[in-house]
Image (spheres, rainbow, N blue to C red):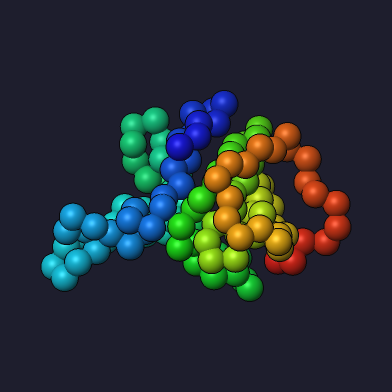
Amino acid sequence: MQATTVGQLWVAYRDEGVDGSHGWGGPGGPEPIGSAGLVRFDLDGCRQWASRPPAGLDPIGDASAMNVADEDVWLCCYPDFPLVRLPTAGPSQAWPTWLGGVRALAVDGRVPSGDPAVE
């Protein structure tokens, strides 16, 4: 979970939050709150936004690393672990990586050089 300077709360979910457990996501149970993989809440805990994959990317199956720089959200997620940038204004961007898994992500807000694989 990360917070922005304007009070948005970003929560990245792992597989149990995406697929459900303990009754969430099962027959007759509620949809898991983290089924989108990445959700933004306001300070009152109300869901404001849920991720939808940019064209060309799979839905988030497991958000393994996330960070917030300024008001942009950056993450790497299963299955292919692309570096994804979700700016507050403008389209999402993604760059392929050679990584087989990510445990942490540090960003300084600069956009990588080179064309993104997905825009």
